[in-house]
Image 1: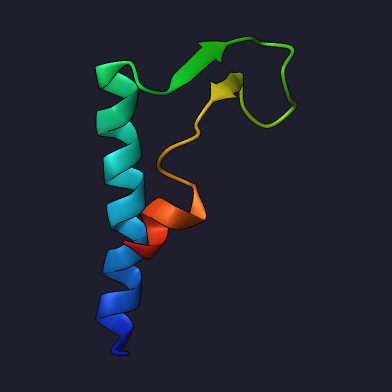
Image 2: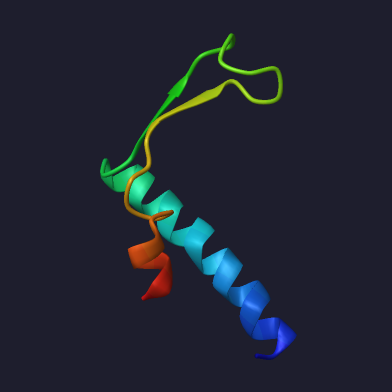
Length: 56
């Protein structure tokens, strides 16, 4: 596999996640006490980071 294809595949998953987030299929809440790194609390992200969807 070429390097550009692997990098593109990783970006595709993140782009699909943002579309699903805007569509309401995945849920993220802002909670300042969630972690020290980011205030985002990932409540539901079942679709984009599942092995089945990534394999497609």
